[in-house]
Length: 260
Image 1 (cartoon, rainbow, N blue to C red):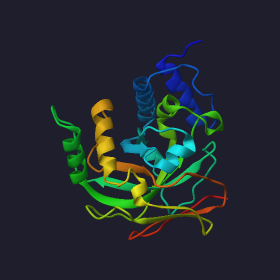
Image 2 (cartoon, rainbow, N blue to C red):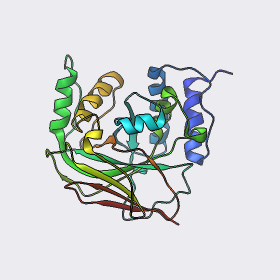
Image 3 (cartoon, rainbow, N blue to C red):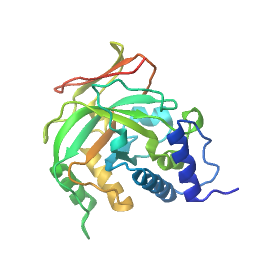
Image 4 (cartoon, helix red, strand yellow):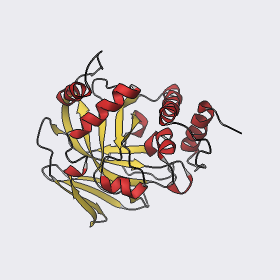
C-alpha cells in the first residue's frame, strides 16, 4: 500500500513520540515531498504545544557526509522541546539509538524575512548581519529509522534526525570563526578532532546554504531564533553515564552528563 505524505508524517511522528524505530520509507518520494513531510511533522508538534525556535543544518562537514553516506546539505526544524539545559543530565529513555556531535550555534537578534527579487547572497548577508551571538553546542541526533540507516529523502522527512540540542556560553557576534581547533571528548578522552572549517570550509558559509534553503522551502527566522550550523566531526554513540565535552578554541568548553 502506498502511503500518502500525511501517512508518512504520522508514521515518523509516532515513532519519535514513542521512541520506537520504524522501517525506511518504501515509497520513492522527491526531496520537495520530503520537506513537505517534515513540515507536516512540525505541524503536529506545534499542535501539541511546542514552539518553533529555528532551523538546523545537516551534513555540512565531509566527516558527517561520509559517516552517513549522504552528500547533500539538508535543513530541519528545532522546537523548544528539543532544547536541553546542559546543567541537567540527559536522559536516554525517550530516545531510540542516539548519537551526539559538536556544532556552532547562532542566535538571531532580529527577524529575517526573504524579500522579492533578493539574491541568495543578499539574503545570506542579511542573516549573518542579524546574528548577535554564537556558542559551542552539541546536537543529539536520533534517526527514527531502523539501524540508523536512510537515504536522502528518508532523513529529510525525518526532520534530519533531530532530537535534542544543548548550547554553551554565548559570545558576541560577529567574531572570527574560521580555523578554530575543535576537540570532542567522551569521559575525558578525545574521540575526534577537527577545526571549525569542517563546516563548509568556513563556518560563515552556513549562512549561504541556509539562505538557499529558505528561498526554496520557506524556513522561518524569527527574532531570537536558534540556528545550528552543522556538525564539525562525525557523530558518536551515546551511552548511559557518559560525560561528553565539546571544546572549540577561544570558547568556553561545553560539558553534558548522560544519565546513568
